[in-house]
Length: 268
Image 1 (cartoon, rainbow, N blue to C red):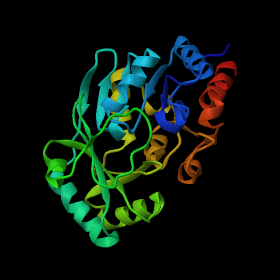
Image 2 (image 1 turned 30 degrees about the horizontal axis):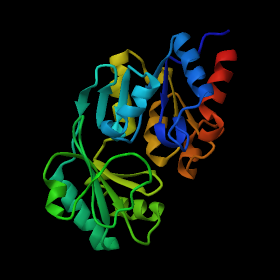
Image 3 (image 1 turned 120 degrees about the vertical axis):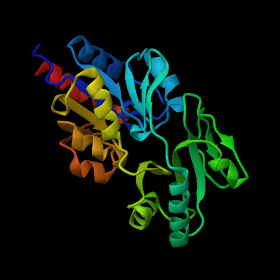
Image 4 (image 1 turned 135 degrees about the horizontal axis):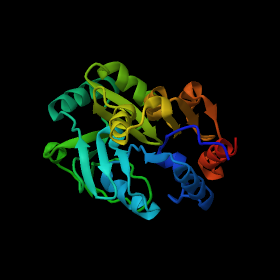
């Protein structure tokens, strides 16, 4: 077996490492275990905040560093503690939100509060994804701004995710970052924050460079991570914007796309 050519394997979660039922296949687990045995580290880089990520990491037996909240949180899974956390300026976010609504009309909102136990608040009309992830409904808009936030989630009654993302970015792109992280998931983040910034912080802690990193993802919020890593692999189910900048496209998350690439590299 040849040496594995990378020292760090960075994987997104939803639509990438996880299948639709939020499980990780035995084949993909085995491929990641083989990579770690070959001397590389595996790091999860997800848009999910820590409270929505921790149970998955625990199930994987993952004890290393994870990048959560689109790069806002660097989390030590083995010690169950935050190493870094960046919050959204609530005054700036409120201004950005008012400008977007002036452009496209009323939005349904949700938000992630900061911290290891940070709640996800969900406002009237926001369409929650089916599944076990907990959220707290609110009616009074003041509740949204009552504690530090890592991000805001936006939904529009008629605009598509792409249309809402592009309209919001064109309107407030100089104030905040706007990303599409998945179906029905358009987010407002602190300006300059991305998965790449969080991954670079985590990689520095691990003593690994961008040139030694391979990254896997499926959505436009993975574009900065692909720009940072030496090699970016889009899943077969990836958004067209990510496929356009990827170094290669593998099979889908349901077809063990990560394992397909890692097995090839391990046997090269």
